[in-house]
Image (cartoon, rainbow, N blue to C red; front, side, top):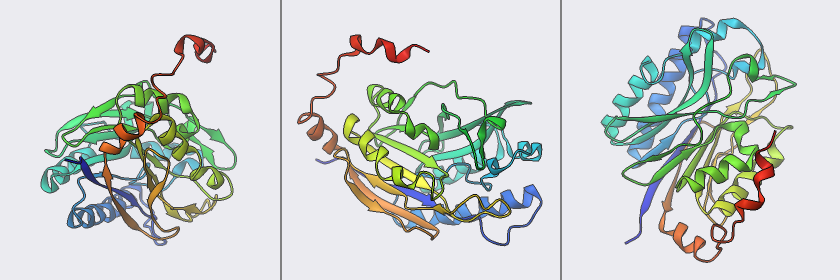
Length: 289
């Protein structure tokens, strides 16, 4: 009997008429995503991933300490607590990317993973932090993650998380596979003209090299006042053969849904024996500074 999982990705824009106070921006976007989660539930989604820093604009387009006020504790902050209630209500596994405060002055770009009973399974902290012009000043806001590459055992399968810029680094993608991941979700915020040519290249390559499914999420639209570029959406799922099996639009709020047959992982790995043929004793130089 096939292990088919109905998975979903939420891509959304921040809206053109956002109120200015941070608490109202946050509430507006939380409410918007609650409605999209409801839509996913109506479509029978069993595991759902939201986009990177889903309850705010991509504030890393500038360096301003006011944005530290968006950070919360994980899992004890209000957003994760709300998402636990929704996970329980809909019997849905949720991957919830938030801005995490570990202590005053120490912040991470984090994704909490919640099981279908609303339980907190753990978190992944973004490992690779960019600091790139124009407008990706993430080292100002985030400390590099120290969580390693955890894989979360759920009732539907084993889930890993990579966040945005992480996807440019194959080492962590391989570590997730070695840790048992069957689906890897990558919530992102990336713009046209910089990374779009890589969007449908790197992550299908990770799926092929590691024999797992990937769910890649990107937000949509332009975000004033920074206007660093168009967040081009095109969220997608790809299978262990690297084939894109479902893809969202470029410019619309959307819940992308796909049925993933996790039995394909065994079929692919028994054809391509990459894990058997690895030579880790020859790769030691890769971990040297």
